[in-house]
Image: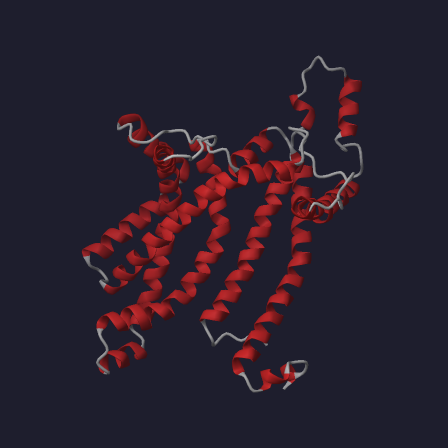
Length: 357
């Protein structure tokens, strides 16, 4: 067969070794294909931002003479042709920034003297600002996603097992609410109820808070509850519906009736055999949903004043800071491409029927 050429000798006898080799080649092919995809995405983002209305010099006071404004535009690189600016951004992002990362961890000086991607608003490197802001976003977004998964999966499993029961009807109603209510409305609603009326939680997320004692840890939990609640609501609604639908598809399969006929307990049938097969599409949905939660975090961070990536992007858009907007948007695109690849690989691991040759 064609796939046997170039395989190690053991792979011809070992099925698992052959499968690992095919999955590795599939992953390498997808990574190679991702390079032109990301380059095309970066070009589209650059052209859209170039065509967007707005002037970076709009924030400059009117008392500044026109010749000074023109020199400022030249200093920002706005006087150069469009293709030159795009090529410089590509080199800075894909070549110089990785060198800066290597220099930081290994103490080398590969990027010494090279010009990095500079924010027009702060006149500082864009990636330095992103690295400062991203822990706040990851802390809130990661917690919300974990909480949503832990809540959604049991709800979906039990709703499918007790189809059309009062629990299933209640879960359907809550899911519809979670799908329908946007984060900017649910965020304001929980602030009014739990912060203004009841006074249980702070309405503004303090990003400068340092956890160094039990009381500071409790305060950190309190200020995280409302943004995590808002983000987790929509994720829980989506995942619980996917879990329920997948469980219902498998509960009526022939292997379930065969397992029950053999005398297996209902717990083993549902939680081992049915759940294992039902998790195959749900795991891919979980992997593909990770980049999308950052979109919800943009709105949530604005509502709760979380000083993270979302608030940084909104501020950059308002200030016409094109390098910052372009870099952040491209980072979101990289996350989408990366987690699409992870979802494909996970699907192949969980479902042995998937072939990569």
